[in-house]
Picture 1 (tube, rainbow, N blue to C red):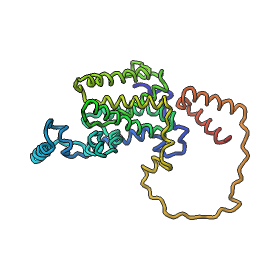
Picture 2: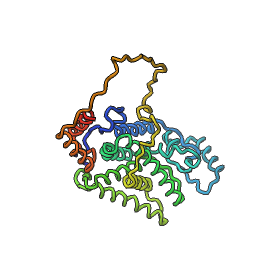
Picture 3: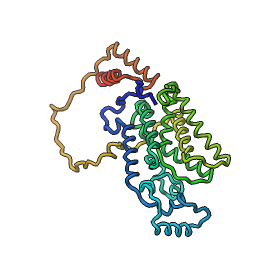
Picture 4: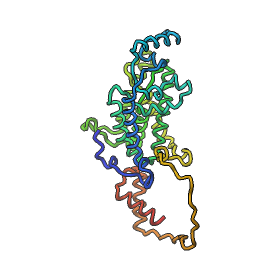
Length: 336
């Protein structure tokens, strides 16, 4: 959308995570890569639909479970069962199966996308990268990961509740709910930053979010008033994500502090076996470091630190240049 050349969109590692795992330092890129790999697996691993998914492909309205089972076996025997991604059978957001106890679907659907067209995953990942990077730099990459995951669950619950109100149970996939939450959080922090639609039309971030919300609310209102669903877009999941992003900003929530002690993405992604035994070597008195007296902070250093902290408070950490980040880190290390 034409904003990748702006200062707040350039690559840079958040000072909150210097020295952390590369996956956590680049959490937005990591999420994009994971989504793409899952999308490839969806296309490669195909399987015939299960009997529980049979009504989604064939009109079985008014049929009993026994009649559906009989029709399924008949189509299967004829070799006419449709194929679908194997991962979809276990991980899509299906309200019926969630109520049966498969609660993992409230978050796993967030990593699946429609295999009918590449544009679904393309636009989701493109927006995730553009808006996610400055948000991750401001809030910290660990917090961003939790925000992404919780936003997906919140969107899923909102989608299921809306489906129950309208008496429909349509399975859904896609990161659109979480991405919508990220877009709202981005707009709440930088409402006047301009995005360029088609690289030509400048639109403030907040106006872009309001337009997107209107495009999702309109078909929801039609459906609520008794009209039929007009497309295969999970509009209510988008609105659920937007609502979550708004509440997160206004309530100043923080999720990473509630994470289990010792939790890290590096531990999840690493399969390296840790040694079972450790060698203990007594430390001699000569090796014990004597703590140094803290150095006084020069007036000019303290003044510039105050200026940069004021800049962060006013415009966010993403507004700092690489040189300014290095100065703050070096000052913190030297005069802590």
